[in-house]
Length: 622
Image 1 (cartoon, rainbow, N blue to C red):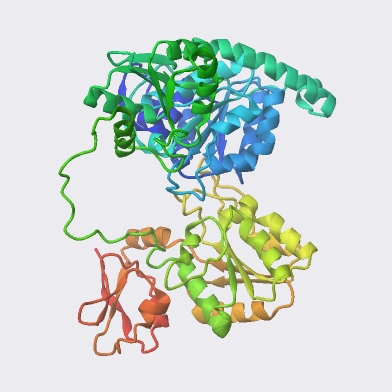
Image 2: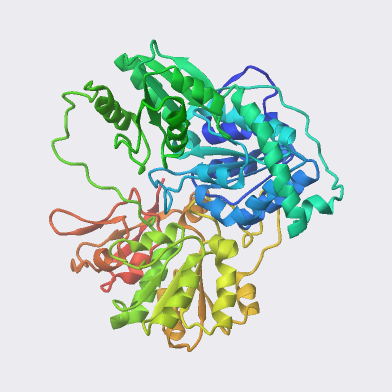
């Protein structure tokens, strides 16, 4: 049995923040969960995929975040406890429904997890989703550690039902991926099947009803303010004085309390866990009790702006240190060095580490790259062969996924990227704005997420470009979750397999070609024909993700690698300069070799080599 399912109260578990969120939802008696995978929230869905059946929780990987929020909101309207979770940019996709569910309110507890990504570890921006709680005007929690992630998730369901509002739990990458001790609580009973009691005046948001819903929302948030003032998650920590008053939330609290303790900085910390609505009375009393204020928050100066507005009336002479004073940055994530530097400037103490040894030579950069044997490399290579001299003028409209790594040398096949699904939409714009060849690339899961409407738009508006759907039979970038084209659902059960080819043809595309990416010549011919076509042309580049493929080959004890015959190799370096597989490397003496330790055995390099110098090893790799 998975440890998250234990019924034992008071047991200590060592959990990821994302796993702690799952445990908190189970303790609350969760009935229904839905998501579209996105790092840093992916492990939440992966965990439900693993334990959903045993936990008796309905779980689905929805086609996108808006769908996930809407199916979960419907379950909540039936009286069930429901949850949805997504990375920060996913809430942009779900924002339309998100804003309105605040007006309709909820029946069963409804918790939403927004996993922000300061530092852009796996995202295209650093947006601060604390704004969303303010825009929608719903309660928000910000956990600082794994145990709080569990407790705030659990309590979020109770608060949601008390106020009849959705509750947002905002996390960040460090919280989602940290491990910490989590103490288990009781597992509340689940509700099973719900029942929807009709109330059109509440749930059908025509303008007349929506205006009433807004009034009720404001009334509910007045109650939420009282709850925030008395929340167990908002508390003052005495650091032995009153010279500095630090107000902080989330993961930043951990760094602040450690540095103040280690450096002997005298003051207090107001740790905010329920950060919307803000506990203004509590903050006012805190401001009065200290000499100087330090605001420690990643992202935008939301707390800082609110505190400065309060301080202007409460204690106008108090000095406030934060982003506006230049001591903290809006950009990036915080860590010990960031806070040590800031507190050094604020206190005049030199808190930066001394005599830190430096590496004699700089460490080599290790940017992410397409895996050895990745089918996307074959697709890009074939497209470049087909473009010939037009390659430099061609526009490559990319999308969110592993295939974005085509931006790197020597492939250089990513010129424009906004968000999920933007590749096909932008390609249509490029095709009308220029006479350049335009190629869009997007993965199978992203196609179902937000790539279909772009096909409809391109057909309707007579756009001319080549649209490649990279069907590697999984949602690879976020951890190999299933999608509608795979025949498996979010509980691991067989599901209808939705045909990408049928959808594209149904949208009116007359050039649709499905090609195995391992056949370079056929791929090249498909691109040559597609580029010559006078309308939208769709190529479905179909081959299983190499990581899934090698698992199957290893299991079957049929895993061979490849090697370069040094007598046949002319050192032309085509395999390095145009193919670029990370398993192929140039030795100090100028000879070219394959690293047997990372070769995934696809063998495509043997088709790229113009001198046929690459051969399969006869021995099965152990």
